[in-house]
Length: 108
Image (cartoon, rainbow, N blue to C red; front, side, top):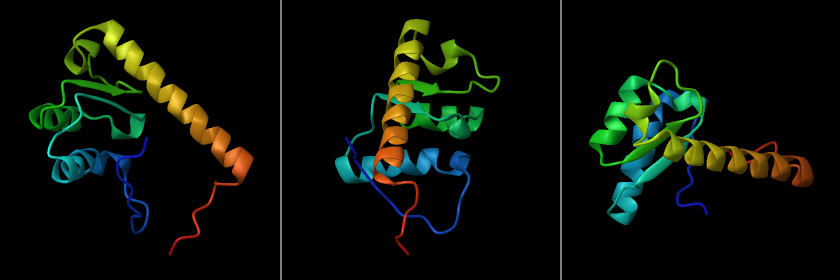
């Protein structure tokens, strides 16, 4: 399920986009997600703090980068569940790229 889509100019670092995505969702839907699972590029202590301040309960970065699991999630079980969800989504994206040649975006 896709809740929002943007085409960005250039190739900004993922770490600069985490909070912006949550703000956009809050503006569009009036609420923030309770749980988020993000790629390792989004992982930073600053992003974790900002996401928690915006009301996100459980955060899962695929690469911890010095962040403790208990700081991100209420339990290791929740962290693992979110981690597996993100990994499954990555697999689906990989399949779409291979099967339908969706490896390039022709939008300009």
